[in-house]
Length: 555
Ligand code: CAO
Image 1 (spheres, helix red, strand yellow):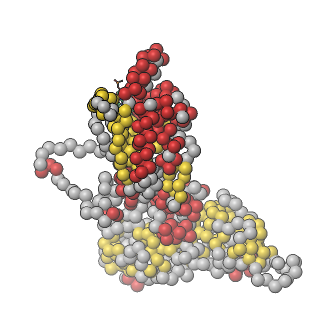
Image 2 (spheres, protein in one colour; image 1 turned 45 degrees about the vertical axis):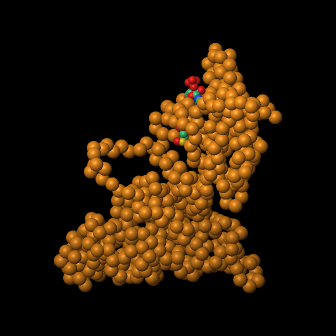
Image 3 (cartoon, rainbow, N blue to C red; image 1 turned 60 degrees about the horizontal axis):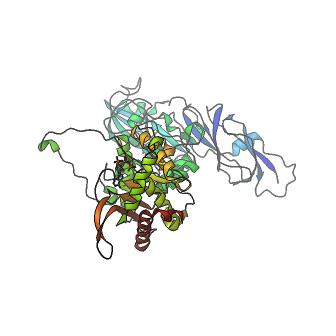
């Protein structure tokens, strides 16, 4: 099998461009014209296609290398070649370059334009081999002030993407294309009102359209293969499709196409490649995170009833009311914690088919034990509250009913063999959930001490993300405040949560007479996809037994 060297073809004025992505690896079978690497200059990136077909033997470049025309990209064991001797001549670089058909060319020289008085037509310039290319991004909107060479839209073929610059400056009066439109050379892109390009303002339309309008940094007279717009330099202010926080992300056309097919908003994906470039793996990771509920896209979050209009759920819009009509008001932004927890709570409330069982536990003896323990430990400075006992009791119940210690992963259940218990803590800025790790391995005193430290950190806003992650099950205690029962919202991906209210003395029938007992109201909310009602009732009953006779924790 002959070994051929694949070289970088004529890439116009691109000199010494950096390799930013390797699209194949040794052992891969590549077809002619298949993209091998992506290179990037400061203005644009492009994929370098293979001039031959075969199996990749050796990559001759790595990420970060600088290449130019003639640089060897890789060696291929040519496919379909007859049993030519091993000495079969490797195609000369020139031949390789000649064979190489630019997948698409961009002649940015010709930004065609007709100018009539102050009404300027901006047309699609010569975009080389690109035919019927789809508009995938629109950077500007009517009313925007456009500069010469400012990118108006991005178009994409199956191999490359490029930004189409404006050939003139002025105010955008009409935009003649939208995302999804197919365009060709000469098509009318936009109508501007304002100044025509230098020296052209008085020229007749025909003469103006012949003008060459160079695009910054690219030799516009020469066709460059597979030019891919590096959108990082696109001005975000003119791009209504981009998050206002910054520039469009770096990504190759194939990755952009992949993202579009999945409906992934590229600007929300964190790139792990060179200079933050978004790779296919990043898109896959993002999609997985969204599907598992770990991440919500901005569009999903915005449509959550708390901040949006619920349109995604087919709900009627959130009422918009001018409250000043009814009396004086003050508007205050919600805290960051409230905004984030609001989105999580909304998702969890909507997505989880949750049911709540209410029950009471007799904690008369446990409370007596707690009070005496606190007396004994007064000098240690550790105060034990009912919540610490509840954490221990819940660990015992989770061990007995393992599905309560699980999480949904698609159609599978992940059973955790560790017991990390979260507890809701009220802070001036909102609700947070610190986590007692390995509660099964800790005594009530240690749990109380840790809880005190974590609750203080929570109030001071000093909890670290690690201290708030990994919970298997959460307890939300309003016992120090009051109330009878409530329906806590499950903290996904957990499958159950225990709400606890204030204990109070109640008359309880002991079979012969009413006796005063201290009763603790429990509210267990559970995910009906994972747990059924009978299991929930048993879980609560078991908790009640433990709390009424804490020695059972030892069993
Ligand atoms: N019944 C009766 N009294 C109770 C009780 C209960 N179930 N639970 C606690 N108490 C008592 C305590 O014994 C303590 O009494 P003393 O001051 O007389 O000793 C008092 O109430 C205050 O307890 P605490 O709230 O400081 O301690 P805790 O361990 O019970 O709770 C913490 C700690 C951080 C969870 C709590 O301070 C907190 O933030 N709770 C709010 C949680 C919350 O907001 N949940 C709702 C989530 S849904 O929006």
